[in-house]
Length: 567
Image 1: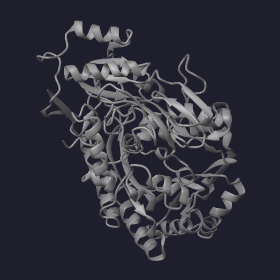
Image 2: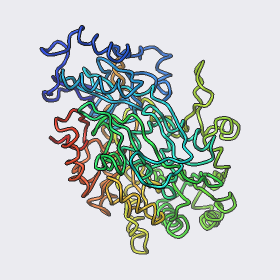
Image 3: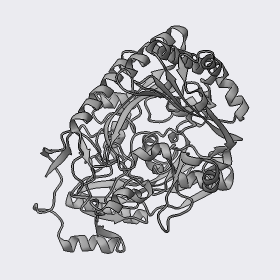
Image 4: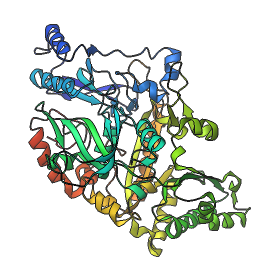
């Protein structure tokens, strides 16, 4: 078989031969054999149908993440320029049970058909899309069960509050169930439409990670169908090596997860946000602004209360989009008062102080649809299709991801040593220099330095790169272009996109002078990440590779930059 990649010039080029059989080749399953699989999965096999993306109304829907998530032939990201383009599978099993999944796995193994797994479909690396493949689609597996007291099978541990989620659940469903209805918290992703298991398998950061840690660290038990077609319930007592690998070892690699059970946590009194756009009138004033912010963070926000991000842009605009937990509005505002006073005292150097917004709301209302409809304004977007659930919304800041094509996405963890006096000078110098090239953000909730000892210890017991424990923030630069789903014309402005990628790469190169061998978050990084095994998993990679070879020796589950994919 030959595959294709979508290049910056908008053309398609051919990759090397693949080991999987394709339609028209000897060995491709006959219609009778596909019919046999369909009977085995109770009629849940079908050819993949793709919406008419040339239709104007459909093109509007391609910016709706809930619509995209309901289509077997679409993915939340439509591609990565120069790497991959979303392309529908040949057939899909719309699984409702683990038995459906086991049947699809056996069929793919026997007939040597490329196997793809999709839940939320948010993979930046295109793990949930491949032409001429059999897709296991878990969207219909959306059962949510909240437990007052859960004990994993075969374990002697004391019961704890938990929630079990089917493989097709998205985080909004869990937040609305656990927080909205039961007044507790489950650690998950910031984006409401990300699939639950996929985030956990990648390690899993959310807006409040410094308080609650990695999503993977809250995993108590998982149900998974492995390459041999066996359904396993894994936890600390059963297949404990595989259980550890699922806590950050990457999705689509060790099998198909059908259910996860996660520990829930005590809910704080409040969740809140700080929004501020400060425009500096000179480069010198801008650098001073960055220095003031870094000092403020190091002395007042380097703790479990604060998360999310601040972006430094080439036009000398500093964008603050931070969140906090368990603080009143007055307490949060007091944290920022030194910077506010500094800006007020220098009206000739800065503009935008009037943009400051500080909100603190009851934590139980954070994902409540009616509450956000009344009070969140343009911060949320509701699914306005006829018949859509009134509960479904996404944060407006995530809108550009829906259907978009990535042109650049580079990231690195930054150690907490950069917050000491000498380190701050180096950090500000590099951040300012990087911002001359392209916008570069610091995301404080995607590093665990500043968290409690219990949070950092739990992270060390996952498969994630241990570097995350010592990172106070995660630096990122990226750019999204318009959708490029199959059937759509190549995007215009390819030369401009190439320039953007170069500028983003230059920005990250400047920052990497601080941390030449920094690791990064495997779910959000460069498709072309060098030395990815070390960057994603550090010293844990050797153990993950042994587990991969034990449970999937033939490489049935293969994804880009997944454990064992180099083989």
